[in-house]
Structures are given as C-alpha cells and as structure tokens.
Length: 226
Image (tube, rainbow, N blue to C red; front, side, top):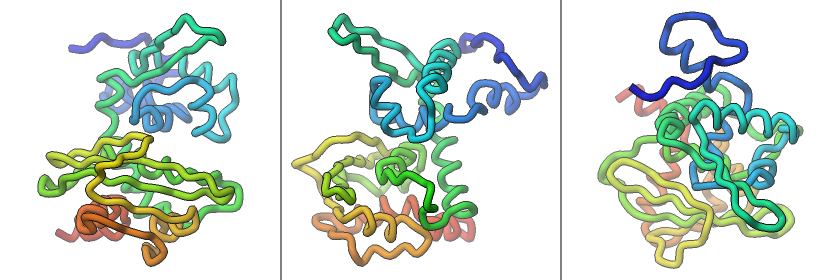
C-alpha cells in the first residue's frame, strides 16, 4: 500500500475511494497542474505562464499542498537567482488516464469555440494526450508546430508506442510526421468543427491523423458506438 498523505483541510469525510481521491485532487487547479507537468519538470514561473488565471499565492499554496500529498517533488538548485523545479511523482502520473478521460468527456459534452475570456494555449490541449490510449498499431513521432498571433512558433512532440503517448515541448528533427499551422488553424482543427484544411501535414499522414483523431469528440462518439 502507498503511503497515505496527510488529511485534507476540508475533506469530504466519507469512507469511499472516490471521496478519498477527491480529497487530494478535487481542488481547483490540481489536475491542471498535473497535466502541465506531464512533459517534465517546470519552474514556478513556467507554471504561472501556462496556468492563466491562477494567482501567485494560489499557485504557491497548491504546489505546497501537492508536495505534502505526495503528488509532486520539489527540487531546489543552488543558483542565483534561486531555482526550484516541480515534478510529478508516480502517484501523480497514475492520474494521467483520469485526465485523458476528462479531456475526452469535455470534448464530447463541454466543447465549443474559444470564449472571449479564455486564454488559448494549443499545447494545453496536447498535454492531455499521455492519458489517452491509442491502438497498439499506432506508432511513431509527430512534431507539432503552432504559430501564435504574434508570430512566435511553439513546438510540441507526441510519441506513440504500445498504445501510449508521451509529450514534450521541443523540436524533433527525426519526426515521422509533422503538422503545422497558425493558431486559428489549430483552433479550427481541434474545435467542434474538426476542420483540418488549413493545417500542413508532411511525412506519415496516417500517424498524424491517428493522433489528431484521439482528441476528437467524433472519435469518442465512434468509440462508444463500437
């Protein structure tokens, strides 16, 4: 049995495994912090950047709690200015299928074009991929490039193997497939309309389509019918 973390300040007070789980991950931001650390360690300021809307105090409090709960490790480095990295533990990584299932549910039942008050980070959509199971026949590396509205290029790498997906934020010269597009092209492709006409795809197009289909609410519906 794993070490039981300390009781939550405001627990559900019910002897049930789902209630115990929500004691640990039911707070606002917790699951998104897990999602945003899926690619590896991040510093405090990097987490602030990918979590728009969270205050400095909220983030500090939530990270401290997640370390105490055994969901994160904190690594301090002797640098000037001081550097602290946060990384997922095995306990937190076991939540990735939960995040993947939540993303699929959101795609089917809560998805829409971006609202006026929502920040857009294409990478946030792909960070749920490690929790989404793929057919074992899907294998390879896809490099994704998104051009933001100010012209900056952001690159992400998804690697599929054995039905699993890993995510990282980097370039990959040896990718089996490449998908690129503007921010609006990605919104059109990943949104409810599923319009991929403005994306540029090179290399293994079947692999690229399989990874995009995994995020599709249409794919979720088809899976339920099957």
